[in-house]
Image (cartoon, rainbow, N blue to C red; front, top):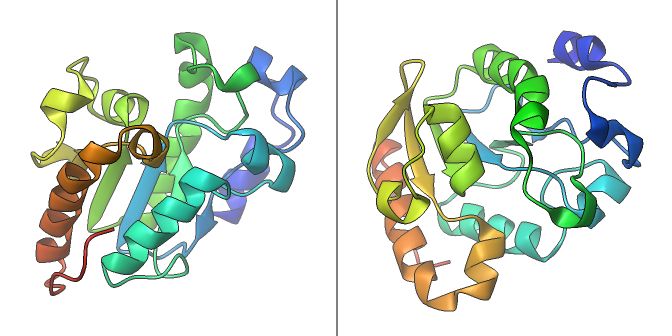
Length: 185
């Protein structure tokens, strides 16, 4: 993982570099059996250089705990490593510039499962433009690794009613790891 981070360096491969404070590479266990992939860093992540540390990060931490894991047990990263201005969606050229690093991270970790958090993570990893509302809840595959698409925690903060569906998705992941169901996130 250190070698991948060194290769990324002080990245200038796309225009996102001009507005960032920190590259948000990833955090957690580099030998994790479970990896969570989001779309990109927000303001708090950019300031701290760590993925999922704001309100959405708090919710993700609760989701991970409800699954019977800690943030130190799993690995968390994003499709793009720099914050899109104003938290806009990452653009295709920005995704293309960062994707080789995401692929290298996943190849280095070799997790037993991936949870794709939201549309951009799922669509990028699966090369599928299906809406997350239709994709979520069904196992897919990324490079031979089972992948569960689900809603992004930031979306769940705005759409409380979808938390039940996201929990159902995470319970399928727990079954893969033979984790007993806990209380909902």
